[in-house]
Image 1 (cartoon, helix red, strand yellow):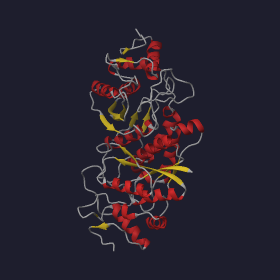
Image 2 (cartoon, chains in turn cyan, red; image 1 turned 180 degrees about the horizontal axis):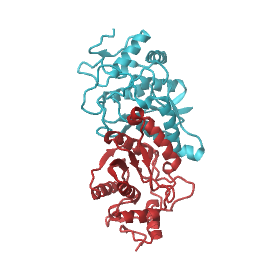
Image 3 (spheres, chains in turn orange, yellow; image 1 turned 120 degrees about the horizontal axis):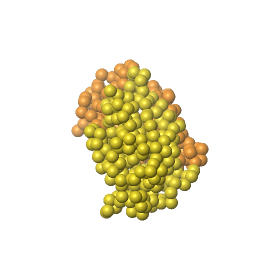
Image 4 (cartoon, helix red, strand yellow; image 1 turned 180 degrees about the vertical axis):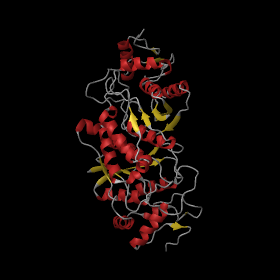
Length: 229
Length: 229
């Protein structure tokens, strides 16, 4: 049986990626990151998804708050005007995916995994530069050059991004077919309010809601400002 | 004036790299990492070196302990038999340099630095795969693809490794000429004993002592088992 470390944030994409890794007959090793994000609630969701898969989650702390400007780890407002074409939004956390992938490669070395599954998407996404295929290819090469397995055995780790060219609607349909419990996931950058509702207007909520609408399905989460049922 | 983020561990190489960045007329932004290493004393040294340069140090915490096997972050013995050819030693922390460089690129984005200076060395070194020039070139490319500055302005960050092809003796001679206060640095993997002595037999001590000896200079640090004066 192959082994896969899975970057699991507890969001829609990474949870689907974890279920795809299982579908691909991999033993799944989820890893989650406490990095100073506002929506730490997603980590509870990551644990729930891991539990739904019957596996333990590896939790890593990394202090990104205050290292570089981001509304996701800072105090500035989360934008609500929707994704702007050709503009990197303030929610972007510089080098977040590089850091997470490097940490995942370190973990892969210890569990002798074959793959790192990650839910990056370059279609219905927020314009983050570290979700693009050319970055993913380059970082896979670089991290393998720094890995003992590649240097000693000539056999590197592969980054698998099964969602990278899928629309959000297709991701949701695929996830539904695999039984991903989307009611256990969380996407909203704001975290839940006291009624456990998502804001409905941040980029992450908008992309999620658009995906469910286009898939002709109902999002099991509750929202404040957008009625999705 | 150019700006340089400098990976500053408080050791001999990174302290020399910081002084070279200053010599290269860069405004220096040191960054240090609490990652679960045994020898946290090096972080005090990193602060001292930053202070000697008259600059503030950025401190980042990242939980590498328990993520992957390493005698530097775990409980297994630090080897004392010297560097073994073509073998990655147990002190290697998988992906450490990838993670540190990715964090440095994030910080560089926030201070708008031009360079990331780092003290990697591929001559008198421990055989760590993430010190080799081919890794450094690949990670520079990958991290730039994930950076806003490169994506938006077409101008990436450069990784400067001025020590990469120097012998340890040459590094020390260069550092001496620049006034690096080596008495404020720390290299020993064990951390200081109660007499503030370094062990003298770990790979890091051995390389340092060999460097001072070949340079015909005296290491200002005190050692337990090896007399260097």
